[in-house]
Image: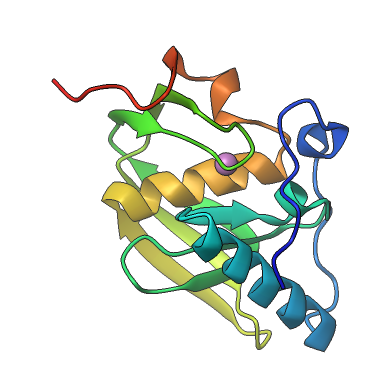
Length: 154
Ligand code: CO
């Protein structure tokens, strides 16, 4: 089921999302709906607050591999990189964001196993962007050179 995306200005996007305490069928259905919504809008990541649920759950897929990250915690980060980002909650807006280049994230899977993932490049960027959503932060709060419409690459 495709869910309605909340956009900047909606108070749910500013809230600190709460920890997920129960990994059950209902949560898995929400994750599947979030994934469907993300794929339908050609996004590479989506966080639960973006669909109005203030809980710590995100779905990312940057390279045809989907990760459902429940209660994600970035436990290590290294380096820094600047690249252009956009967000389903900020239609048309793009901006340059500095992020760690490499991260490790610990998370709970949709089947309630605690796991760890090392990521770099776009996947690392995407996870950091989504974890920011769980902390009430949008990329436009930290981006530089925000433009309406995708900027030309030089
Ligand atoms: Co976003």
